[in-house]
Amino acid sequence: MNIGLFFGSFNPFHVGHKIIASYIRDFTKVQQVWFVVSPQSPMKTKKSLLDQHHRLMIIKMEIEDNVNLDVSDIEFGLPTPNYTIDTLLYLSEKYPNHNFSLIMGDDNLNNITRWKNYEKILENYLIYVYPRKNLDMNIKHKNIHLVKDVPKIEISSSLIRRLISEKKDASYLVPSKSWKYIEEMNFYKK
Image 1 (cartoon, rainbow, N blue to C red):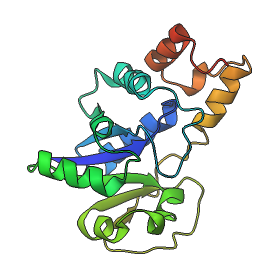
Image 2 (image 1 turned 45 degrees about the vertical axis):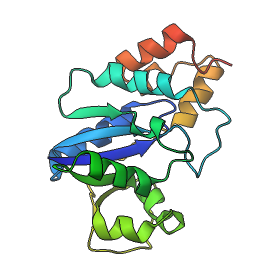
Image 3 (image 1 turned 90 degrees about the vertical axis):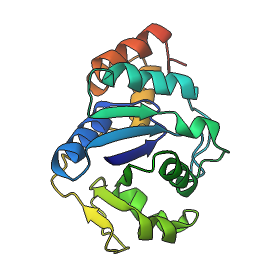
Image 4 (image 1 turned 180 degrees about the vertical axis):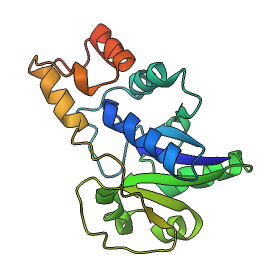
C-alpha cells in the first residue's frame, strides 16, 4: 500500500490539514494518509505545545470513520527530538509491504537541506509538495512532486490558538469532532 505521511505538531489539527490530506489521497498515488503526530520537532520550541496524547486524540476523534485517513503515534516511542529520516527508516522496517512518501508544504521543502540526512530522504522517498506560501522551490529532485491544485488554505494552528485564547470563535477552522474535544477539555484558553 502507498502511504502518505503528513508529519506535524497539529497544535491543533484544523480543517486545512484534513483538506490537504484528502486532496493528496484523491489526486496522487497515495492510497492512505497517516497524520504523524510529532512530540517535538527539532525546528520548533515546546513552549505552547499541547500534550502529545491530546493532539493525537483530537485527530483520532475526527477521522475515526474515514478509512483513507489514519493517525500515528509512532514518534512517541522514538528518541526526541524526532528526525524524519529516523521515523521513515523505522516505519519502512516495521511495515515492509508499504511504500511511504512524505506530504509537506513548499515552506518545509525549502528548509529540507537543514534536515538530518535529507539526501537519503530525497533519494529513497517520494515527496508530495503542496503550495502554502507560493515559494519558488529552491530544490529540485526526481522524487519531488508538486501538487499544484491543492486548495490553498490560509489557516494556521497558531491563529487558532490565538483566537481561542482571546475568547474569539475559531470553531469554523477546526473539524467538528476535533472542536468538540478542544472545547470540552478547555484547551488553548490561557
